[in-house]
Length: 218
Image 1: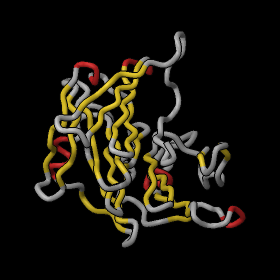
Image 2: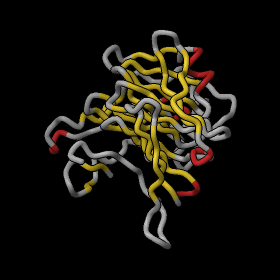
Image 3: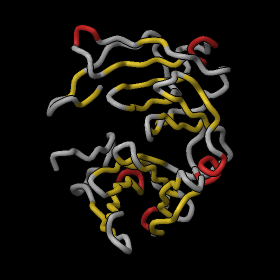
C-alpha cells in the first residue's frame, strides 16, 4: 500500500508474493529485491522488480530487472535506501556482520557496497531526499551521516534515547527515529549546530506501529 495523495491505495500485485525482501524507491520508481514466498524459490530469491510510479495507473505493473547474482541475500525484511540515484541495501538488520549491495537504477546493474559504508551500517538507516543517508547505532545511540567522498560515517549526535532505534524517516532537515518499541519518536534537527533534538510521544495507550514519513507539505 502506498500514499500518492491524502488517502492510501493499493499498487499493482506482485508477480510473486514474497517476504524477507528488500524494498525501496528512487526517482519515483519502487523496487523489490529478493525474498521468499510460501516456499523457497531460487528465481524469486534472485529477482529484482521495478514499478514505475510515475506512469498512469492503468499502466502500472512490476517489471523484471537485472537479478542478483545468487539467492542468498534473503535473510529478513530490509529497507533499501535510495541515495544519489542508487539503491543501497544490507541483508541483516541491526549491529551485526552483514553483506551489502548497490543497485544502479539507470545502468540496471548490481555493484558491491562501499567498504566504509558497510562497516558503519550498524543499525536502522534512512535517506533524506535521496541526498543523504543516516544510520543509528542501536547499541550506542549514535546518529551518523554518510560521507561519500571519504567513504566514512560522521557522527551527528549520540543520545541514550536513540538506543534500540527501529525506523528512520528524514526530510526538511529533520531525522525522525522510532524507538522503544514504538513508544517514542526522537526528532533530530540535523541543520542546527550542534544538532538539537526533542522527543515526541504518541497519545497515551498508543504506539507507532506503521511506517513513518515526513510530508513535504508539513
